[in-house]
Amino acid sequence: MSCCNEGCTTGDIDKLGSSLLNEILQYITSKKLIISRISFIGFSLGNLIIRSALWRPEFEGYRGNLHTYLSFSGPHMGLLYPNSFLFKTGLWIEKRLHIGVSVSQMALSDHKDPRQSFLYKLSQKKGLEHFKNVILVSALQDYLVPYHSARIEMCKDAVKGDELGAVYNEMLRNLLEPVLHNENCNFVRYDVSFDLAKSFLSFAGIEGHLALISSWQYLENFFQNAGLKYFE
Image (cartoon, rainbow, N blue to C red; front, side, top):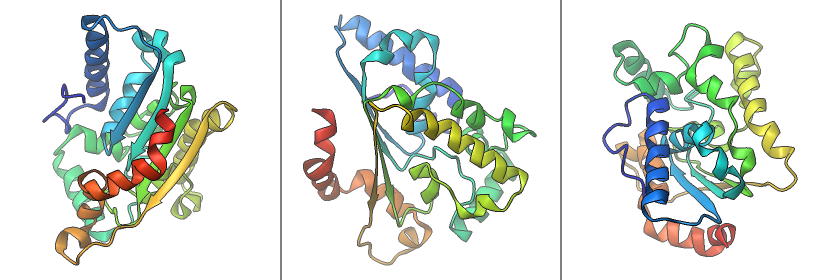
């Protein structure tokens, strides 16, 4: 498990990706490993950090070894078009107060031109299409990461014909087309629904987000019934 970016998740995702790659390469070198397969499991922002590591020239020699990429609630399409009013309000406050670089990057507000934003440029980089398996897991009760973002799919609000919608569509094509055009890449989406007790955390969608990695019963069921076969 990576630990190089612990406590730094509000920072620049590009720098976090560089740190992750350095950690991976140092581990391979220090253990004198002969690599046959490399798989990644990411949760939430961690998925963008992983993708930010994959495109770098230093990793080029290992792209042929990529096997499975398992994404739990990854904001691959950013935080555009959130489906929670509470989250929209919180995001608006964070953007105005400039609380975190990563938040502005996920909101595509780190540049006046969204096509010059970090996340748009990341969508143009090499990455997911090199895996044998790309598995996306999303939770219906997760309101922190938009459902369509975790699934890398079209969103009805992005079809309105405005500029941001056009940018969303371009990012979607950038990410999906290389994966879907690779006949050797197995692309699968899983939806999860939790039976959560009523509380502020469940209402805000926080509990639904965290349950993807905090519910051991769910994780055991997921890997036994679906997940493990992608790592064989």
